[in-house]
Every structure is written in structure tokens, then in C-alpha cells.
Length: 233
Image (cartoon, rainbow, N blue to C red; front, side, top):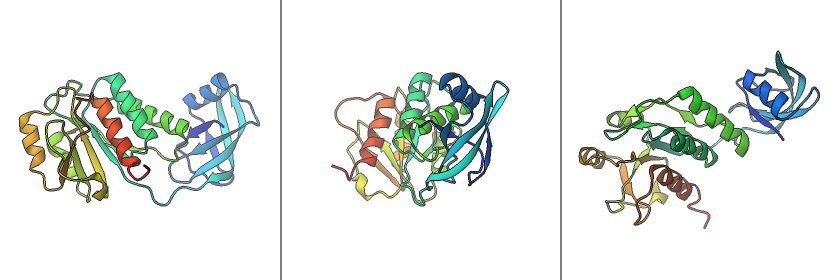
């Protein structure tokens, strides 16, 4: 069934006014009409089956009927701190990180970061579409790009900064970490000064993903997958 992320409270009988994007998708792409059903979620109230009250060029409206899934009370936290990379590759990271259950994304600016700006509205749209498609009930929290030197100030709630490096030996197993914050370097890697800064942080762990040099987007998705499925195999 079609799923939509909505920015409205969801409860029995609640009214949802569709945004232009949602109206266009239901009307022109999915060919829906009055009386059809879809699923809605907002990250707080679980998932609800909703019925289309009207759907036309000027707008659309839904009414929530009943809850199909409750919002989980607990979720496994996983933070991704990727250095900004080229747009297409960054889009892929946002999309797949959402599918893999990342709860917070903190884009990072490093000395070798070529891309220095991020369209947060566009990035939020990518997260929203990914969550709709993968049946997730919330969106990752997305923060504005942060200089590397300021990252420890944001990670001050018991998170362990997991610094991926193909040049250093691992300093501990991932299984002992409660809340990981995976730091992925830019396309040119971290500078020596940045590496020295990272290895002096009190709550960090060095990790690498094998002998080959991975592209930034590959490393990000690989380490998240390893973390999420570490107890499966």
C-alpha cells in the first residue's frame, strides 16, 4: 500500500491536508481517487490507514481510520557522521542510511571536503522518500553540516566516535559500543592533523573494513550494515 510521511498529528478521525508533492504523487503518479486508502506516519504516532476524502488539482485531504502499527517505544540508536561528498553519492548515503536504520545524520566538513554546502530541504526530501519506501516509521534526524573540530561538542551524550581508517589498526570491537557515531572521511581522506585530533579524543574507537580502499559512500553503508547485523550471523 502507498505510504506517506506527513507533518500532522495522527489519531482516529484526524484530518491530513496533502502537500503539493503528495497530492501530485497520489493523483498523477499512482492514479488514486476519492475513497482509496493509503498509509501515513509522522515519526511519533505510529502508522495509520487513511482514506482519501478528495483529491483534485487544487489539493487533497485524507482522514485517518485506524492504526496499523504502533510507534516503537525503543529504537537502536546509530549515528552517521559522513564528510560531505558529491551530490549523487551523498544522496545515496542519505537514502541507504535511512533504509539501514540510522537514527541521526551529522554531515561533517573536513579540510579536504570539496563540497562545502548541503541543501537541507532536498536532503530531508530524500530521507522522507526512503522512509516511505522501506516501511520505516520515522525519519533520521538531520543536522546542518558541522566542522570536524566541533563534532565532539555535539557527541556529548555517551556516544562512541568510531573513526574509520584504512591505515590504523582497530582499537576495539564494535560489539561493546552502546551508541556508535560512525565518522566517514572525505574522498581525499583525513589530513595528518585531523587524524591526530581524532586519536586524542577520549571516547573513540578506530575501525577499518579490510585491506582495500573504499570510496566514502561504500564505507558509510558497509559499516552501518556491519553494525545493524552484527548479532545476526
